[in-house]
Image 1: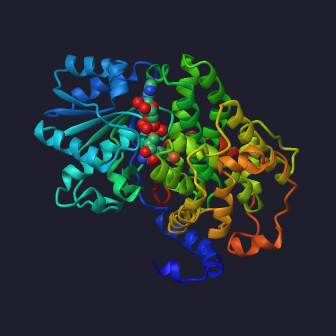
Image 2: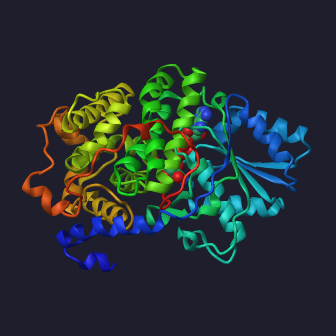
Length: 468
Ligand SMILES: NC(=O)c1ccc[n+]([C@@H]2O[C@H](COP(=O)([O-])OP(=O)(O)OC[C@H]3O[C@@H](n4cnc5c(N)ncnc54)[C@H](O)[C@@H]3O)[C@@H](O)[C@H]2O)c1
Ligand SMILES: [Fe+2]
């Protein structure tokens, strides 16, 4: 609220410094990690392990499509073989709304469950987290649990089997759910919601339709990119983010064209998990801040919204993030060491635009209405400016202009719907108009050591958790 009273230019000036300061404090927050089981059949291995943990009854939370496709079978066979009792709640819908999660909570109670296996995409995993935290903290509503560490008691144990690649929710501290009355998304953040164990089983993903493969894959790319260019990045999140970007550029086009390619599916699962580990520490940025508003208001699938917005935010951020984008370009194998930062950064932006096109991602948002743009931009800026350590801050006016480029009518005869594939080269001493928007951004951030790109190490120390 106080933020709203400060003039926009002053606010932008202070935000960069403030966010860097917050990052210094929160980087030591311990974030637990699940035991990871990886490879075809790992959902059965997770079932074997969970059956041995002595739970009274396990609630499997999933959606009807996954249930009908028979994807639960390996898990449930293993639970039965191990003598574990379970029940299935398969009503989750995309961006699960509060009333639906309340039904899941009631189902958990009626069946005297004491653990959850979250089985599905981000919507099923996040609904599971919300159920788990609510069961342990019955004195609070889901709305009251939104925010940081609002539940006093530990959530019930969660085990996760992601079926998209993806949100990375199997390793993150966040649960994103929908508040239909307010046409917005709620985020619950608690390090204790991180699943105890997760299975990355590519055999569950071979039937994922190409459009969902594309959108969820770009969500993972966005997590990695936003974690890497933001101010809370650490050497460990850098290694994870770069690994994810390399894997995604190599494998997402294959998984999209050839859904049954198990190797590409497995590598995309790993990339999604690495990107999740990176952003749960280093946080996300404007792409997510804007995409969340599209999801809340228009029910745009999360990955699709990110994919449409990503090139525009990269283009805006480039004057303050060229060195970091250059590293991403090299890891994506679209630039090499001989390119200067500006050239390599531009190549990265071009490659993201080309990948979106190859994956059939539109350049505009069909549901977007001109009249909604001021409110969307205001909410997006509020979300970003109260928590995201972005490399370059934008004013609400700049945010509105960016969103306006996504209007479908304008797109018909106007190539501005997507950033020009080759805008004029940018220099760090950017145009005058940039100064008010990003005065607090660092004068120069040295390119990080390229060797950081090789680490896939799943252990981390570091900073503040976040949603994606
Ligand atoms: N908690 C986090 O850290 C985090 C991070 C990013 C996104 N999210 C949230 O996750 C949600 C989006 O999750 P999502 O993108 O994984 O999509 P989703 O879970 O909404 O699933 C999308 C669709 O894909 C189908 N599907 C899933 N797996 C399938 C499979 N293997 N085969 C066939 N169909 C399958 C589902 O039935 C559904 O219709 C959003 O609410 C978003 O805000 C959370
Ligand atoms: Fe995301």
